[in-house]
Image: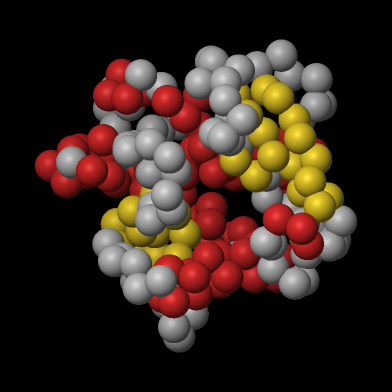
Length: 184
């Protein structure tokens, strides 16, 4: 597995997505920062190449290396993937892209049209920003625009495209209700 993007590319994306957050307050106050609680079940996988943004010595992260083929990643992926769990309080300017994106997710329609949707994965907890539609009106348009641009760039990497396509296909097969937040 050879990623298209490296540290310079991810740094540009991190810089673009550092200026905004989804709502004009700390959304962790709504759920007691459940996703940041140190727990083996909560965490995220880094995108291919994103590991270059970290030393793997960050005191606020727990690192686990897993085999891509054994953990349901696209067939184009081989080798290891990195699963990170937070130890209670992240360094916000260094949080991984999946953390910056949640509660949205990139999605590809049947014809490949790209949009950001409200996450449909079962996370083991309920995000008030997904569960309470009135809260979604508070979402920052600038935040969604920067995420849309960033994911649009990342989809040029065939490995990342394959992952987003696989997740999108799974939603279609499971007949998940898709609610578009931004994009086509």
